[in-house]
Image 1 (cartoon, helix red, strand yellow):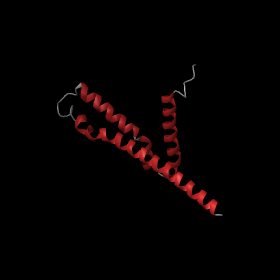
Image 2 (cartoon, helix red, strand yellow):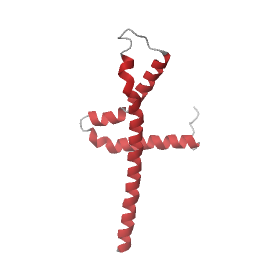
Image 3 (cartoon, one colour):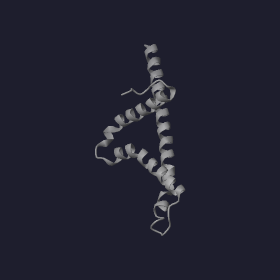
Image 4 (tube, rainbow, N blue to C red):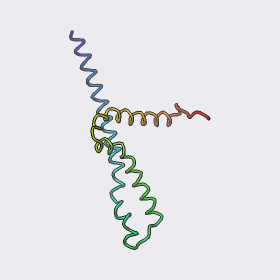
Amino acid sequence: MRRVGDALERVRIVVFVHVQGAVGRERLRLIRSILPVHGLMPLLMKPRNGKRWTREDRSQIVACLRGVFALTPYSLVFLLPGSYFLLPFLAWWLDRRRMHRAMRKSGTVTRAKN
């Protein structure tokens, strides 16, 4: 009976470590996508204040908007009623995308030719 308890304890530790890693990855991903949005309002207000956007401003706006669009799955979970129940699906989807990118990077997955 003691062996079963030890095995269950090891499984709980492994699951905790995996969940902790996923939470850490998503926290860093959120921070990276939120940081560029910090200076978006002054850039968007330039034409209203009589100034023109430079090429650098335009590229910074595009980077900020990409950061905002990267947060869309998270905002849907918090804005839609009852979407709290979609959190397991969101976690699966994000992990699936991460795994697919890693497999593509390593050359394991190739696209089918049409």
